[in-house]
Amino acid sequence: MANTAPTQWHFLSRSLHWLIAVFFLFAWASVELHESYERGDPMRTWWMVLHFSIGLTILLLVFARIYGRAKHPRPQLYGGRWQRKVSLSVEGLMYVVMLAMPITGLAMRQFEGDETLVFWLFKIPAFVQENEGIAEQLEFFHKELIWNTFLGLLVLHVAGALWHHFGKGDATLRHMLPWSKSE
Ligand code: HEM
Image 1 (cartoon, rainbow, N blue to C red):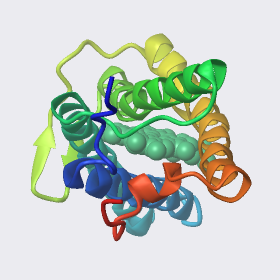
Image 2: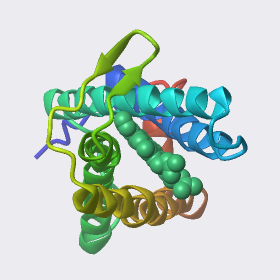
Image 3: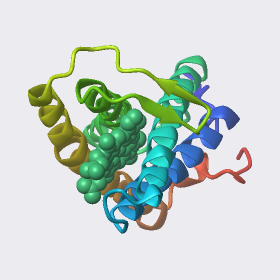
Protein backbone atom coordinates (compact mmCIF):
# COMPACT_ATOMS: atom_id res chain seq x y z
CA MET A 1 0.00 0.00 0.00
CA ALA A 2 1.34 3.48 -0.87
CA ASN A 3 2.44 5.65 2.08
CA THR A 4 -0.03 8.55 2.18
CA ALA A 5 1.32 10.14 5.39
CA PRO A 6 2.14 13.87 4.99
CA THR A 7 5.81 14.82 4.71
CA GLN A 8 5.65 17.23 7.67
CA TRP A 9 3.41 18.12 10.61
CA HIS A 10 0.48 20.40 9.77
CA PHE A 11 1.23 24.14 10.21
CA LEU A 12 -1.14 24.30 13.23
CA SER A 13 0.65 21.43 14.99
CA ARG A 14 4.12 22.82 14.22
CA SER A 15 3.24 26.33 15.44
CA LEU A 16 1.59 25.07 18.61
CA HIS A 17 4.44 22.65 19.34
CA TRP A 18 7.02 25.48 19.54
CA LEU A 19 4.64 27.98 21.13
CA ILE A 20 3.82 25.53 23.94
CA ALA A 21 7.56 24.81 24.39
CA VAL A 22 8.28 28.55 24.83
CA PHE A 23 5.29 29.00 27.15
CA PHE A 24 6.48 26.12 29.35
CA LEU A 25 9.82 27.90 29.65
CA PHE A 26 8.02 31.12 30.66
CA ALA A 27 5.78 29.25 33.15
CA TRP A 28 8.88 27.80 34.81
CA ALA A 29 10.81 31.11 34.72
CA SER A 30 7.92 33.11 36.21
CA VAL A 31 7.49 30.81 39.20
CA GLU A 32 11.27 30.74 39.77
CA LEU A 33 11.45 34.56 39.58
CA HIS A 34 8.67 34.98 42.15
CA GLU A 35 10.94 33.13 44.61
CA SER A 36 13.51 35.93 44.45
CA TYR A 37 11.10 38.34 46.20
CA GLU A 38 10.18 38.34 49.89
CA ARG A 39 6.64 37.46 50.95
CA GLY A 40 4.51 40.65 50.85
CA ASP A 41 6.52 42.20 48.01
CA PRO A 42 4.07 43.11 45.18
CA MET A 43 6.58 41.79 42.60
CA ARG A 44 6.23 38.32 44.12
CA THR A 45 2.48 38.44 43.41
CA TRP A 46 3.12 39.97 39.96
CA TRP A 47 5.25 37.01 38.86
CA MET A 48 2.72 34.55 40.24
CA VAL A 49 -0.15 36.23 38.33
CA LEU A 50 1.98 35.86 35.21
CA HIS A 51 2.57 32.21 36.12
CA PHE A 52 -1.19 31.54 36.47
CA SER A 53 -1.91 33.40 33.21
CA ILE A 54 0.76 31.62 31.17
CA GLY A 55 -0.22 28.28 32.71
CA LEU A 56 -3.88 28.70 31.78
CA THR A 57 -2.91 29.84 28.27
CA ILE A 58 -0.92 26.60 27.97
CA LEU A 59 -4.06 24.65 28.88
CA LEU A 60 -5.92 26.26 25.94
CA LEU A 61 -2.96 25.76 23.59
CA VAL A 62 -2.71 22.07 24.52
CA PHE A 63 -6.43 21.61 23.75
CA ALA A 64 -5.85 23.29 20.37
CA ARG A 65 -2.83 21.04 19.82
CA ILE A 66 -4.90 17.92 20.54
CA TYR A 67 -7.56 19.20 18.13
CA GLY A 68 -4.88 19.76 15.43
CA ARG A 69 -3.46 16.29 16.11
CA ALA A 70 -6.89 14.69 15.75
CA LYS A 71 -7.82 16.67 12.64
CA HIS A 72 -4.61 16.29 10.62
CA PRO A 73 -2.72 13.02 10.11
CA ARG A 74 0.84 12.80 11.46
CA PRO A 75 3.89 12.28 9.22
CA GLN A 76 5.64 8.94 9.07
CA LEU A 77 7.19 7.47 12.24
CA TYR A 78 10.65 5.99 11.69
CA GLY A 79 12.30 3.07 13.48
CA GLY A 80 11.34 -0.47 14.38
CA ARG A 81 8.07 -1.55 16.00
CA TRP A 82 9.23 -1.10 19.62
CA GLN A 83 10.85 2.26 18.84
CA ARG A 84 7.62 3.52 17.33
CA LYS A 85 5.74 2.26 20.38
CA VAL A 86 8.14 4.08 22.74
CA SER A 87 7.85 7.30 20.69
CA LEU A 88 4.06 7.19 20.73
CA SER A 89 3.99 6.39 24.48
CA VAL A 90 6.30 9.31 25.31
CA GLU A 91 4.24 11.64 23.09
CA GLY A 92 0.98 10.42 24.65
CA LEU A 93 2.29 10.86 28.20
CA MET A 94 3.51 14.35 27.33
CA TYR A 95 -0.03 15.35 26.39
CA VAL A 96 -1.23 13.99 29.74
CA VAL A 97 1.35 15.92 31.80
CA MET A 98 0.91 19.09 29.71
CA LEU A 99 -2.78 19.02 30.67
CA ALA A 100 -2.14 17.88 34.25
CA MET A 101 0.26 20.76 35.06
CA PRO A 102 -2.19 23.64 34.58
CA ILE A 103 -5.17 21.63 35.88
CA THR A 104 -3.43 20.74 39.16
CA GLY A 105 -2.13 24.32 39.47
CA LEU A 106 -5.63 25.76 39.18
CA ALA A 107 -7.14 23.03 41.38
CA MET A 108 -4.52 23.80 44.06
CA ARG A 109 -5.63 27.45 44.10
CA GLN A 110 -9.27 26.37 44.23
CA PHE A 111 -8.79 24.09 47.28
CA GLU A 112 -6.69 26.78 48.96
CA GLY A 113 -9.83 28.93 48.68
CA ASP A 114 -8.00 31.54 46.56
CA GLU A 115 -9.32 33.31 43.50
CA THR A 116 -6.98 33.36 40.48
CA LEU A 117 -6.23 36.60 38.65
CA VAL A 118 -5.62 36.04 34.92
CA PHE A 119 -3.56 38.60 32.93
CA TRP A 120 -4.86 41.30 35.34
CA LEU A 121 -8.09 41.17 33.30
CA PHE A 122 -10.45 38.87 35.19
CA LYS A 123 -10.55 36.59 38.21
CA ILE A 124 -11.50 32.94 38.43
CA PRO A 125 -13.32 32.74 41.78
CA ALA A 126 -12.83 29.83 44.19
CA PHE A 127 -15.77 27.56 43.41
CA VAL A 128 -15.01 24.72 45.82
CA GLN A 129 -14.96 24.35 49.59
CA GLU A 130 -11.50 25.18 50.97
CA ASN A 131 -9.60 22.01 51.91
CA GLU A 132 -5.98 22.34 53.04
CA GLY A 133 -5.36 18.55 52.85
CA ILE A 134 -6.40 18.28 49.19
CA ALA A 135 -4.54 21.52 48.38
CA GLU A 136 -1.33 20.04 49.83
CA GLN A 137 -1.74 16.83 47.79
CA LEU A 138 -2.26 18.89 44.64
CA GLU A 139 0.77 21.01 45.47
CA PHE A 140 2.87 17.84 45.68
CA PHE A 141 1.52 16.68 42.29
CA HIS A 142 2.03 20.08 40.66
CA LYS A 143 5.43 20.97 42.06
CA GLU A 144 7.03 17.54 42.38
CA LEU A 145 5.42 14.48 40.82
CA ILE A 146 3.96 15.77 37.55
CA TRP A 147 6.64 18.44 37.06
CA ASN A 148 9.48 15.91 37.46
CA THR A 149 7.66 13.40 35.25
CA PHE A 150 7.42 16.15 32.64
CA LEU A 151 11.16 16.87 32.91
CA GLY A 152 11.96 13.15 32.51
CA LEU A 153 9.72 12.87 29.44
CA LEU A 154 11.23 16.05 28.03
CA VAL A 155 14.73 14.56 28.25
CA LEU A 156 13.53 11.41 26.42
CA HIS A 157 11.66 13.53 23.85
CA VAL A 158 14.65 15.79 23.04
CA ALA A 159 17.13 12.89 23.12
CA GLY A 160 14.88 10.93 20.73
CA ALA A 161 14.60 13.86 18.31
CA LEU A 162 18.38 14.42 18.31
CA TRP A 163 19.10 10.71 17.93
CA HIS A 164 16.79 10.51 14.90
CA HIS A 165 18.36 13.63 13.38
CA PHE A 166 22.07 13.09 14.03
CA GLY A 167 22.18 9.33 14.68
CA LYS A 168 19.81 7.94 12.09
CA GLY A 169 19.75 10.94 9.75
CA ASP A 170 16.00 10.58 9.17
CA ALA A 171 13.41 13.38 8.81
CA THR A 172 11.76 13.10 12.27
CA LEU A 173 13.06 16.48 13.52
CA ARG A 174 12.66 18.17 10.13
CA HIS A 175 8.94 17.19 10.16
CA MET A 176 8.47 19.53 13.13
CA LEU A 177 10.77 22.45 12.27
CA PRO A 178 8.79 25.68 11.66
CA TRP A 179 10.74 26.48 8.50
CA SER A 180 10.76 22.93 7.11
CA LYS A 181 9.50 22.45 3.56
CA SER A 182 7.66 19.38 2.28
CA GLU A 183 10.11 16.81 0.93
C1 HEM B 1 1.87 24.19 32.14
C2 HEM B 1 1.67 25.08 33.05
C3 HEM B 1 2.43 25.17 34.34
C4 HEM B 1 3.72 24.83 34.61
C5 HEM B 1 4.78 24.27 33.68
C6 HEM B 1 3.93 25.10 36.02
C7 HEM B 1 5.13 24.87 36.71
C8 HEM B 1 5.30 25.06 38.07
C9 HEM B 1 6.48 24.69 38.80
C10 HEM B 1 7.74 24.05 38.21
C11 HEM B 1 6.28 25.02 40.10
C12 HEM B 1 7.24 24.77 41.27
C13 HEM B 1 8.25 25.84 41.46
C14 HEM B 1 9.21 25.51 42.60
O1 HEM B 1 8.79 24.92 43.60
O2 HEM B 1 10.37 25.87 42.48
C15 HEM B 1 4.97 25.63 40.19
C16 HEM B 1 4.42 26.15 41.34
C17 HEM B 1 3.16 26.69 41.42
N1 HEM B 1 2.23 26.81 40.39
FE1 HEM B 1 2.49 26.21 38.49
N2 HEM B 1 2.78 25.62 36.54
C18 HEM B 1 1.83 25.68 35.55
C19 HEM B 1 0.53 26.14 35.66
C20 HEM B 1 -0.03 26.68 36.80
C21 HEM B 1 -1.37 27.21 36.90
C22 HEM B 1 -2.38 27.28 35.74
C23 HEM B 1 -1.53 27.64 38.18
C24 HEM B 1 -2.71 28.27 38.82
C25 HEM B 1 -3.72 28.81 38.19
C26 HEM B 1 -0.29 27.36 38.88
C27 HEM B 1 -0.07 27.64 40.21
C28 HEM B 1 1.10 27.38 40.90
C29 HEM B 1 1.28 27.66 42.32
C30 HEM B 1 0.26 28.29 43.26
C31 HEM B 1 2.58 27.22 42.64
C32 HEM B 1 3.25 27.25 44.02
C33 HEM B 1 4.11 28.49 44.14
C34 HEM B 1 4.77 28.55 45.52
O3 HEM B 1 5.21 27.52 46.01
O4 HEM B 1 4.80 29.63 46.07
N3 HEM B 1 0.60 26.78 38.01
N4 HEM B 1 4.40 25.64 38.93
